Length: 156
Image (cartoon, rainbow, N blue to C red; front, side):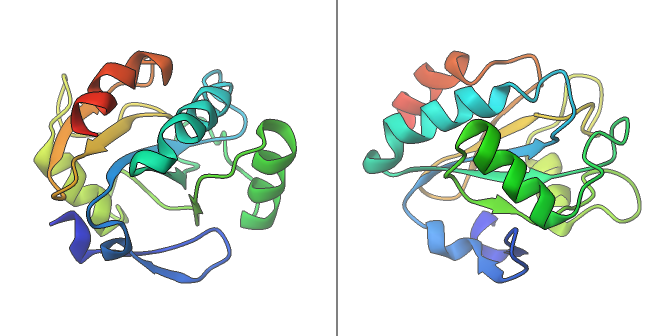
């Protein structure tokens, strides 16, 4: 179950996902030097709009696609805050594919398969988790944050 996992936040602290029980969660693998990086702006807008209704976004930095997240956690945090005023929780850099795939991403991919297999295809792939911890939907990078509002509202 989603709540069984513990991740590291961008500052290196353990963050048990059980902290988010009862909330709608959007999990996104992110990168600072990607064509989709501007989605941070839309993600932050979603977070601001729905956070008081029990919605949270968890951003997971990943450098597996075109080396588009080369920085340290401190550099990533600074970039996100300074460039996009990101206030939703950001996590330490992880792998989402391959032999070092983070256990959370193994779980997410097993619950919601991609269109062309389980692997994450690119940065800003999104997983939507309901208030009970069920992974209800997976969205490709091209799906904009604004385009997720109806799905999020249904779960809130």
